[in-house]
Length: 261
Image 1 (cartoon, rainbow, N blue to C red):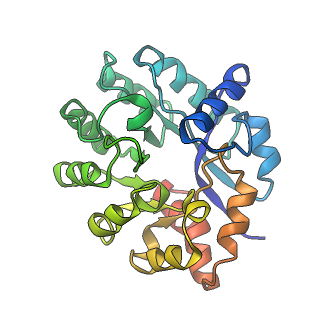
Image 2 (image 1 turned 120 degrees about the horizontal axis):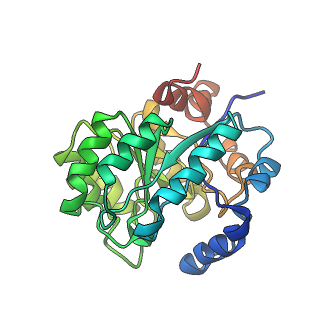
Image 3 (image 1 turned 45 degrees about the horizontal axis):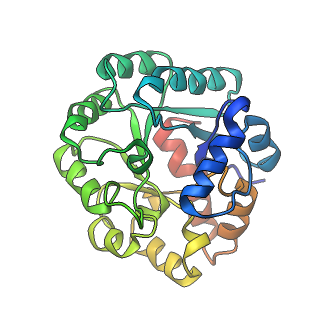
């Protein structure tokens, strides 16, 4: 049996999971394979050892409440790696970063298009520096066909401004912005996750992307509930990679990043 860490999942309280998932599907005009309930995640991923779980706060007033849900879910499920949220329009974000770090958060999820701010918004720079100080990994949604807020270009500005920040650029560096990502981000000191790439790109291009970035900086991700971990695994596992490469992407790279034995 492989050991697998899914570095890109979203979970929501049962009371809002269906609505939250449907809103995501409506935005991207894509059918959702799952809902965002914790129970559904486990049903769809019996073979996954650990999950990075997150939910980016779209309302500044909901940051702490959302973070408490993620942190409590991780307390209840030892296989969860909690990624919390911040928002530049919310008050007390430096203090909130310190609080969630004390409570066991391993990282932060940023979704600029849903949260309505640019990745390189000047208000975020002090927060990024604090995340780096606290050793919080930052998972960025990158790329959008309708918005420039999450562009690879803007992410590169952040990487240059805060080089000590540990960055995961989702969707192989830029959903629907892969040309720009390949030009600007490939070869940089940034992790990529594999989520959604094989849903949108030819296998040959994904393989080329994997060869053009350090293999130790590639992480497996599903983007649950948009895609089930089972579907994401089957798509990725069909690629003609070596067993060593697959083991690095499925587990070893993320285990090293998150300190998992």
